[in-house]
Length: 356
Image (cartoon, helix red, strand yellow):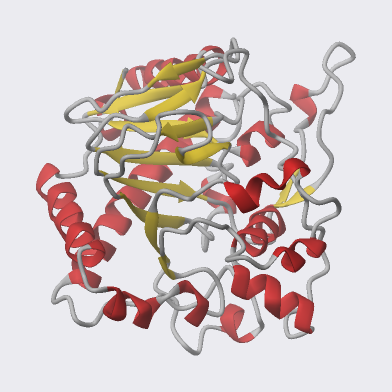
């Protein structure tokens, strides 16, 4: 648990001490809770209420903002029993097929509404075909949804920039190192809903399967248990909700920049059968940012573990792999890409208690 109050003050020594605590958590634990974070509780609760109203809407209404209507990955992603909706041919995009057809048999026990920066229709990056910088879709049948959800997005983005500066101080980098590389980031907010179900509680029926986040880091708010994270001993541990806090976990890009000094936190949501809502905001860098192990983190004892990554390509590749409509566009030649789509994230690790 890290108290962020010093990050909002003028005491430089206190700010540096708090940044070191954050750095210690990233090196030795892999994730941490934050309190006194500056995001009003009233705004958090209003955003949850908008999420409930959206996910409680009729399917015919939600279909109007289905992710397949987006030129990228914005909008509603429904619960699904097959990630490919029964179309295994779409997997020929990846280098090798998933062993055991896992993606075809494991249900996705959540639905989501994804949004990002409120990109205009005439935005130059969108017009240039950037699939990670596209306009949001909005549920126009819900009064106030767009305004207040974007207010929450902006507030947590501001908090994220404070954490970006704290990460830089903890790593003894220039304080603006990360924020200078995140002026128009491909960050995404996801409003998640896990419907109640009566499925067996086992490793085949997870709310979300084990993964690391593809961006720099994530700020998550949750209202119910179910989240498990992998600590630096590669063990699954519970991360229950704590009033007044967010959870922060490191993502792929910070692991890449630090050559594994900060580990991308693997996490999953186990199925407890009960309804659950959560709101992760995935903090990314600007699309064309080059990420590679920084020289100070590469030594004879710790050689470079990763090559050069283009931040947006890393995210876009996995977004295509997870969105049927984008995979179809690639197969049809409507979407031309010049980066690989990997069958599995190179940052992924397995827990020693994987089957627990």
